[in-house]
Image (tube, rainbow, N blue to C red; front, side, top):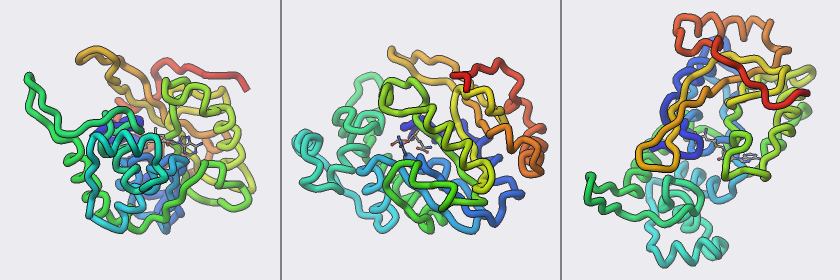
Length: 273
Ligand SMILES: C[S@@+](CC[C@H](N)C(=O)[O-])C[C@H]1O[C@@H](n2cnc3c(N)ncnc32)[C@H](O)[C@@H]1O
């Protein structure tokens, strides 16, 4: 099931970087955890912390960590919870994601689909099966989950850790004007340099000039219209100050065996800092 940035598929290059044995035993932090498609595949770290600014998403993830009992939401309840999530935050979380079109936050009710042209699908049931898989996942179940902005991690409280960021892509429709990408790049600069000395990897389509591609993969995104897709190059960036470390050298060495992850395709920079 692919949603919230589609990391359910085509993310093997990211996993290969984060699970490189050079990072074994480090604390792992994921500040934009979404549905934990990356987090659940991370292994070998000393501890796991994940967070997201979406309050209902974190209500859902914390519930999945504790339980395999899932809630059902009717179309009428959906309408009510969309405007009054405070009535029942857990049910509102199921409405917002499990019962929403494409798993996107209150993007329209989806129950059982009864398509005349294709096999009927029960999206909420598929999602609940994924939640059970997450519940059983060792990394997810041992992870400390928090609600809040990525800014809760600072150079004072977070050092010598491996950090993976999968932020809202700059300029995407749902986050237009609400996510400050420049602010994120400034935060990555401060978290990557001394005294914080974290290894921070960021997935984006483009980055400022002082960031360097470590791996790149072509993504086929669906766009409006039946079956239509477009190709985009999704890049994993690090700050240039890390490029000459043995860790990034090891990551790059490991990736050279797979040419489809190479960074030699056209590079676009979003802004000049
Ligand atoms: C592209 S999605 C992450 C997808 C995730 N990798 C997955 O496996 O599903 C981006 C996430 O960033 C979260 N987000 C948006 N603004 C944020 C902020 N300022 N701080 C932390 N999380 C934020 C959104 O709620 C969303 O879950």
